[in-house]
Length: 254
Image (cartoon, rainbow, N blue to C red; front, side, top):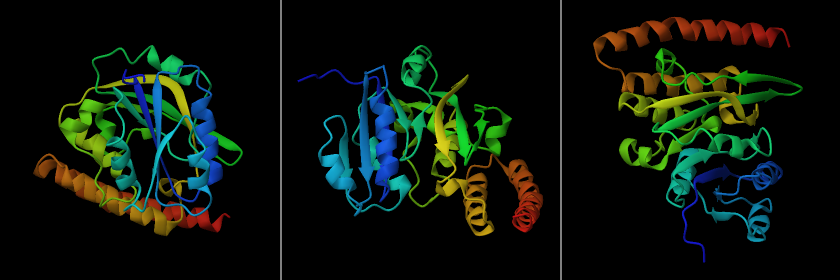
């Protein structure tokens, strides 16, 4: 039995989305770099996911009801042993078969997080979601978690994902890491592809409003004193109105 810990651990959360899970798993299995482990945390699917996972000889998995994506991600963290951890959920894929091979050339670093760009796919169109690291923009906008390798030891320092958050658990984690002095290396290359089908990608006003509610909670939770709380208060006063108008006009143009 091989007792050497893998360099990279990939965690996939899924629920009743077998075609998407198969797509993600195929992309992971096709990687030329093999020093990784893949763990799938299924929320108790009833669409054949469990039966399909039971036939896999390359993936460790768990299937049981959970309290949402953050809970599934935390369960995955308890199952892995790699030095670097990447979350690649059902339907996310690597950009190329040698994506992990290329990532290995930059993971020899003292940084806590190595963040790559992510290609965001909307139907027939795509755009590059650039990682901005922990510059000033992290105070308002997260880095793409599908492109971010986080050291396992960072979770010991910062803690796991907040299960009270249904959408912004990754932003909450990265903002906590920033506040505690974590270092980020930014790699200006696309690592993965993310389709615009996830909960955080929905653009209807009800979905946006829930996402913004969580982001506002995260901001005030981690605000660095009265000045930053005032900054956030002003930001949300104007930003919510701007996004409502943008969503309304977008709905009229459809």
